[in-house]
Image (cartoon, rainbow, N blue to C red; front, side, top):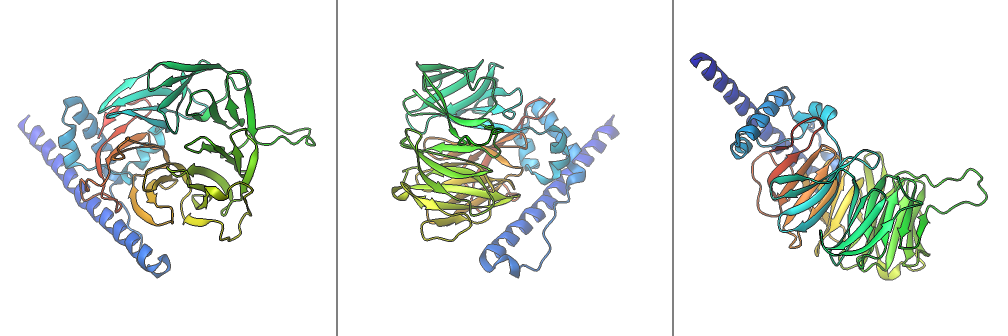
Length: 422
């Protein structure tokens, strides 16, 4: 027994040493390469891209992680084994799932969904480090741009409330849009209307109407249908403007009545994402090609009558970023935070300056931030939620990025596995 115990400890110590040595080497190499490329240009980089060589350790580290969760020693484990993405890819391919529709509630509490629009989603609350499973009938969750209005879709019924679990403002019984998987749900600031984004059309939902505002029907096409890909839409923070787009159509800017007042063509291949700045002074739109993309910004005082042609340079817009395929984003008082297909979150100001970047891995699928803008929660297709204290300082020497952020923990929600903290 003594031999078995000490032999086990020796193996663990070797695993720990290799995990840390190789992890530090990889993170240092990536950070140096990215810093060089951004300063001097990627064409000047002549070295090889660093590789994370820890894949052979993944099974053992995951076993130890589950053991730490069972024993209540996660903090010690986190110190000994700083988390990583690349070594776990073989596990992610079997176990990961989307984390979507994150919304801040208050204090250290958020709500989120596991699963895509056409799966049997499961809603949870994450309160500090405790996970609470909600009613299995919930299919979508939304939060207004202002006024703290929440919207919950369950059993083809949407209720808007003043605050989480607050007084009910309005209820909407879905008819035309019932049983459709919801990509995104945004209640208007008064809780009396909803912007509903689906792959079968984008709608304004009111008490009396379900009006499809995108795509535009083609009366001359007898086989026309509303099915779209890469569907995306947003509201301005004051709810005066609506922006809609999809893979096959330019971003269309609508007024509050749903009437088109402007159009923004893609500067990469396909319209993919849109967002207004916190003060509504700027609208950004992203278009993508494979895993890359271009994000441009326009002043909102110019959008009435705006027409930006696809693939044409213009003084009408600013290039915010020329690399990211943006899947999700949010805006703070100072900058946008955007999540991309490669697993990066990056902050940009309105002039297109990259304020910071931080790598987490897998496609970033949802973001939410505390009201004081100090704590960021990041959901990804890895089946994880990362809780970051912004600007608090790196927790370890495995961190990839220059954002100086402290990861408090990552919550792992994998298929057919217990929920784990790391």
